[in-house]
Image 1 (tube, helix red, strand yellow):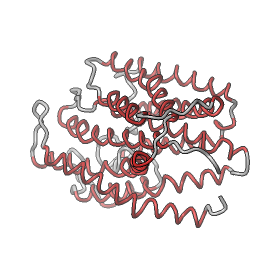
Image 2: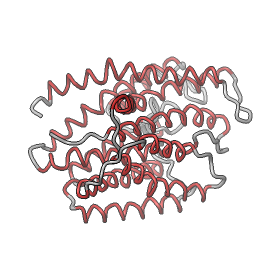
Image 3: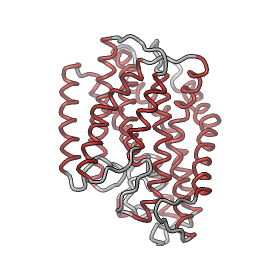
Length: 373
């Protein structure tokens, strides 16, 4: 299947993954101690998930629209997505289970958890099934308590199924209608729901799962619509520093501190996902890189998914260390040695997973189960 490769979009996926790592290390650890007081470091990097959804829609549309009109079957598409995504899901869950055991089989409030409960949580995680609140092993209502960010992979799977079963069959006109309706839905959710904003999806509570679904149901089809328009218009490629410009824009948007009140937050978050992120994706798709820059952005793209899939167990261990050591946040101080170890360990392990587990396993699985394509 002959199609263009969007190196800059790959690199931007890596930038977003790095910003999410920073968000989780700084914000999640600190909010554990001072919640619900807003914290500021890399505060809006959780929007990187919406950027991921939009990139996925764009790439899926460009990679598979024509193929699904031809010889690629629904089963073949699902097989490809499983090969692409699930090896790192399995690794992330297993690392999360090990981290939970290292913490001593305890919830955040100190309640002891049985080995059987951990095994059941592991089984649910391996099949990417959200944990009901009643049996969630951390006691923080996480849908995926062994690896919290897997909630977005759950919705990524739903988005892929929705794409292959319905969205790719819609005309561009009806896809525009879908996107318009989803904009109204997510805007209403962000502006009217108690608490405001769109930082939902990670909890197994119904309101949070609904918020996560709305985030995917807008961003994924939006990326797909952009891919179709991009294919039709074939805009002129842009040489130069497009990756640097798009990366700086993304870092600024995701790193902006808390804005002071929830109404401003809701408006800002909507502006990002409805206007600014599509602009970055559009110009990123038009950009061209070569030489060492192409190798650099390619590496960032390759690393992005392993990093996102496995970094959070290291954050769990960091938070557990903070709790057991009796550390108390004051002002904006951080235990910088522990912060550095957490981030370096996440990056190093993600790199090892990419080189020696994810990429080799996916190549083997493709040869074994998807060789005809």
